[in-house]
Image 1 (tube, rainbow over the protein chains, first blue to last red):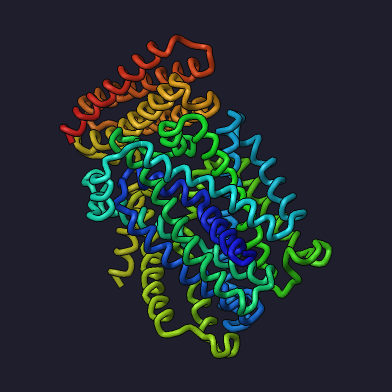
Image 2: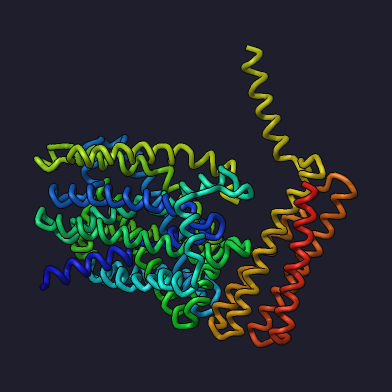
Length: 409
Length: 150
C-alpha cells in the first residue's frame, strides 16, 4: 500500500511540477495565434523530456553521482566548461522568468504592483531552499501545482466546437497572416519550453538527494512516463483555452492576466482562485528547481560540496551561489523588464542550448565505466539520436527565426 | 581583393539602410506598418471587453480585472508608439497615420474609462461597454481600409 501511495504521489508531483512560466506563457500565446496547430510540438517535447530525464535519472541511480559531475569528468574541463556556461546562463534566465512569474501571479491576487512582489518572491524562494527538506519542497509545490488541472476542466466547461479543435490539432495549417517563419519560431519556443535544460539537471541531482538506487528506477520510470505526459496534456489544455476564447476574437496573449480569463469565463471566481493558486505553485516550484539547478551545476562542475541533504554550513558555496543567482534575478526584474518577455526569450534560448545539455547525457549513459551493464539499449539510443537531430535543428534555427520574425511579433 | 572589400561594404550599407528612419517606401508598406499596431490595439480592446463583462457578471475579482485592464493600457501604449514613430511616405499615408493615432488614442480612453469603472470611479458598465464597442468598431474599420490598401 505504501508503495502504491508513493507511486501515486510521485506521478501527481510530476504532473503538477511539469508546468512552469515558460509552458504557461508559450502555450497561451501559441493557442491565441495558432489554435491547436502546434499541439504536435508538445507531444514531441514531452517524449523528448521523458527520454532524457529518465536517462539522467538512471545515470544518477546507477553511478550514485549527478549528471554534471560525470560530464566534467567524462568530457574534460573545456567541453564541460562550455556546457556549464550555456546551462548556467539559461538557468539564470529561466530563474528570472520564474521569479517574475510568481510576482505577476501575486499581482493577480492582490492588484499590487509586481515590483513590490519581486523581492518578496525572491526572499520566499531562498527561505524555502534554506529551511525546507527536499522531499517536502518537491511534493508540496508539485501537488499544489496540480490545481492547474482547472485548465483542462475549463476546456470542457467552455463547450468548444470539438471538431474545430481536432481539425486544428490533426490537420495543422499556417494562416497567411502569421506566416511560416512565425509558425516555426513558436514551434521551437514550445519545444524549448517542454525540454528546458534545468529539468534534467534537477531530476538527476534530485535522484542523488533522495539517494536513489537501482531499485528505485521502476518508480522513477513510472513518474516520468505517466506524470510528464499528463503534464503535457495540461499544456495543451492551456493552448486550447486560448484557442477557444482568444483566437476567434483576434486577441493576442501578451500578459499573464489574459491567461486566466478563459478559466474565469468557464468556472467563475472559484475556478479563478484555483488557477491563481496553481500558477503561484507552478512558478514557485520552478523557481525552487531553477535556483537549485544553478547551485547544482556550478557546485558539481567545481567539485564543491553540494546538496540539500547537507546542512548549509557544510555546503556553503553551493548555497552562496544560489543566493547570488536569486539576487541577480531579483535585480534584473527590478529594472522593470517585462517578465513575460524574459520568459519568451528564456524558452527560445533554452532551445539554443539544448544540444549542450542532452548530448553529454547520451554520451555518459552509453559509457560502461559509469553504467556497467546498464548502458542504453539500441531502442533508447535510436530514439535519442532522432532527438539529437531535432534538437540540433531547433538550436541552429532558433536565432535566425528570432531575427526574421522580430521574436515572433 | 575587390570582392573582399566590396561585399563587406555592401553588407554594412544594407545594415545601415535597414536602420534608417523612414525606410518604408510605398503606400502599401505604410499601410502594412500601421495595420500591425491597429491589430494590437484591437486585441487590447477585445481583452478589456472580456474583463469588463466578467467583472460585470461577478466572475472575476476586481484585482484580476484591474490587472488585465492595466496590462492592456501598456499594450495600447506600444501600439501608439508604433504609430507615432512611423515616417509617412506622402500626404495620403500621413492622413492614415493621423486616423490610426486617433483610433488608438480613442481605444486608450475607452480602456482607461473601463479601469476607472472597475475601481468604482467611473461611469456605469453600459457606458464602458458602449465606449469599448465603438473603439473596436473604429479600429476594425480602419484596419480593413489599410489592409485593402496594402
